[in-house]
Image (cartoon, rainbow over all chains, first blue to last red):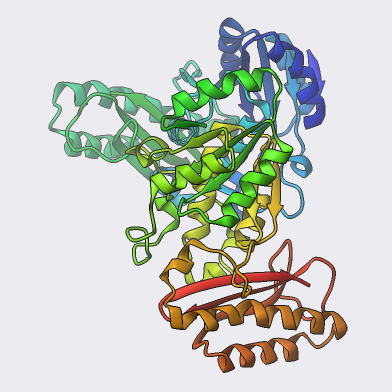
Length: 279
Length: 279
């Protein structure tokens, strides 16, 4: 595995496989790697010739009151994990190079970025799309691999890639979970032991609601109300949202249809957790 | 000259010269071509192997109250002019293909887009950068040619290209003028005969102010006030702005320095005119 820090070196190293027509799979991460990230790399290894995993805590996607400074960072461990799953290139870009002084660009998909997680984090997705547009243009991969766990991010980035006309595929990889169903997330490290059962209720409740929605497609409001009650019952004090949405437009739906997604964001103590299931 | 309407055909036609390492020069226009546009094509012909000129009235850069519907369009005449200056490809994209239903992307450089012309046209430059980012990614030219007459557009697009990291050069071409100094613009067609002397005052005043600013670098405010008075004297009823700005940040400067630009926007009757000179 080659560890690369500069964009010039990245371009240089990728020039040869690119000229040979080899496919390049890209796995963007913010580090603090877990099995969810590794599943992305494994999938990319199966489908592409050269796999680049990036580790970069993107400052643009954090609001001033969020956890940019305390976001877990462990470069040595992350690089060992990338090596373990045989990533070909670990790329550690620097903010100085991606966003040099004077950087003033914003790339956004406003219609998809203000709803759901965007309501409480109004600048978050523009931070993601601004960074990713720059990286995808620079790297020009054949495909980018994204976890389904961050479902809104997946939808927003799909729309960005489509609307910019970037010649690459966005490939979604199923969420990897703990044995109790909790979706793997770097932020799970913030959870206290006693909070784990409350956190695990999120996926359990979503999993219970999905078949109910399929069974009674007109009962969306009632089933969602039941879900909110179940989360509260399980000890969740704050629910940012629990919604059934269209899987492309993210608009709430009142009758179950194809491609719908049941999405939720809750707080457990001071940790915000998100999850989603297909319906 | 090949006339192309679909993006698929454009890609197909450019594949061969691109594979041969030929350079591709791109001249974006909204049609209603004049000698200013033709100067861009001529410059591209000198510097690049293949020259693509596009004719497309970009709907994103017009506000609802602006002249999108009445903007001058004459495809036959425009194609004849492209042919005359030996453009290799005339590309007439369609809004349906560039901005299909569901298109929701915004690419912007907010810091540079809200000042000067952006004060009165708050969505204009985001419309330009959104369209141009998509086109530049699709076309992947070696260089794009822009007129200095739309100075803010030039600065905004330079910043967009730099911040997105698009691998191409932005080449500025000097403004082409009528004999009375009026900068060529498709919107000059809106001017009545009697308005022409008033319109011509714009460049005359800018040209008078520039040496005064160079001669007395601390007298910016006084020289600009003198310029506003001269424009009013010449019959200009409305001045949107007359400013000395930094040529990269577009911020007003109070002492003349290198790279400064004297920029102005005025109204003559119901026609808005812009112009600028180096200081």
